[in-house]
Image (cartoon, rainbow, N blue to C red):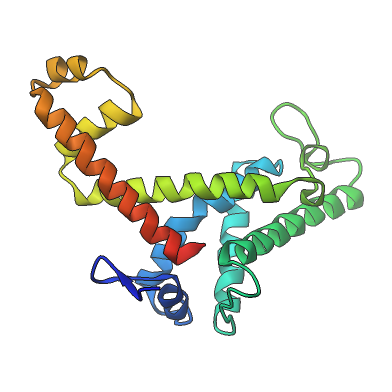
Amino acid sequence: MDTKVNGSIPTRQSLLSRLKDWEDDESWKEFFDTYWKLIYNTAIKAGLRDAEAQDVVQETVLAVSKSMRKFRYDPAVGPFKGWLLKTTRWKISDHFNRVRKKDVSSPKTPDRDSEGTATVERVVDPASLDLDAAWEADWQKNLFDSALEHVKRKVRPKTFQLFELCVIKEWPVSKITRTLGVNMFKVHLARHRVSKMIEKEVRRLETRVI
């Protein structure tokens, strides 16, 4: 495997190595930006509310940071995404157990959501969920979303707008040309250029995070 893609982009193993330095804010920001939505969505699917899922994100990232200095990436043992799923699952379980213990200790005043449902009744024990299948589907979507955001920052706003209207919002080309006052060639060019950039970015992320 090449150690670099697109000149100066580090591979997965390079990123994991840099994460061993807690003071490397840029690398940790890259890690957080890439994974927080994946962790958050998994917590939501386990039955947690927004604030609770945000807590799981923070706790998972903190656990990763504490483990990273001793972490040794070994493809023979398992992919990085599997290790991250286990860490996320543990933090969801920790939250579930805290809520359950709180409810048991205060049976007369259980936490309830806006619809009057006790938190312990609403939260699903992650051990009972097929998180592996959901994680794999969300992993692929997260790669695309991360690639999309990265490419969006690299191209001109007008170019991305044309791509977004054509591919994501699925506007007819004729509607785009009328609305924005551009010719058909620019629409097709933007769609082709941005699509290729996204494909390349997804491949880069795959070499770094699988």
